[in-house]
Length: 151
Image (cartoon, rainbow, N blue to C red; front, side, top):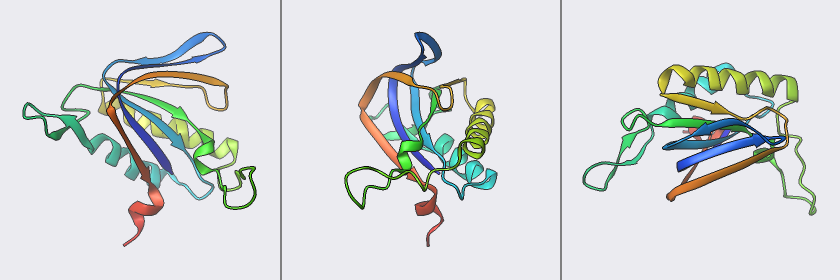
């Protein structure tokens, strides 16, 4: 599982002209699911996401979590995070999870994050989405479950 996390002042996702998710202060999370991902991996990644301390405290130190600032999440599925560009110029997406499995894990991930924060906005899995955000910092972090499980 791969997450690209952008700290944002505000964000929204639109599908066919309709806003499907909108947040104020929080994270925009682009979520990629691989063929080997499981609910156990999703649990670990969600826990790490919620626990990240990347908001500034009163001293300007990145010491506060999303819960500490009453922040919100906008979670967008993005299979292209598993693009393999090692050969040729056209990316391969063979490492990305198959749509049925990936959709279920995306929903599961969003569901387990929902009780942890003020609000969870969502895109629509597999849809052509337009994402707008005001990146705060900018501050962007990449979490990869493969990196987190290595010793």
